[in-house]
Length: 223
Image 1 (tube, one colour):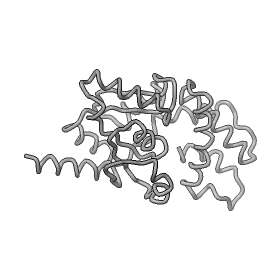
Image 2: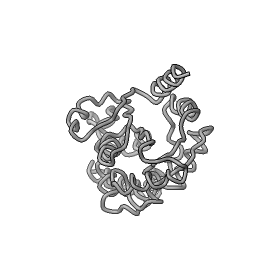
Image 3: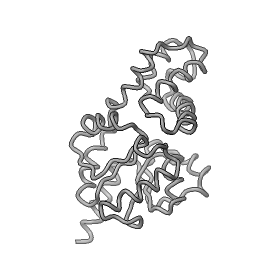
Image 4: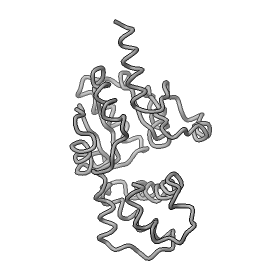
């Protein structure tokens, strides 16, 4: 996403707080993204991103981007790279778990993601915001997950919800009473402390790779 925002960032005068600060830039951009998710929950993600792109440009006092530029930004989702450890970790976890994706991405884009950056990973089910008609952290999405995995023979108590986003995933996971694991890739201890009373994850890892190693070790010790 940060790479996709470069056409806008390149038009800003320097110095500025955005060009060299990915975390600050994405936090600012995502505020627009999340606002549209709340107000237009049935809008597909690849249609939502161009609107957020234009809103972000306006907040930077830049001229409105062309329709083509905004659409190009929204069409990049399926090419966003996975973290280097993600595919090997998911393949390792697949030995012990069913894999179910609960995504805020639209069906076309997630299909391209699974066929591209996540190629080789076999998911047992994929549930998207487009299917559900709302975006995480809406509890409707998590209720959909709980009901959906019953078709796989999995009950709520057997779900191990695993995610990086505290606000969009870990907080609603606690509300729904799900066991959960937090993948803290960005060392967000400060944010964790701010949300401490809304969180109840059981495990915390720095990456999916670290989680997969811990799971393999646990199952090995159980033999």
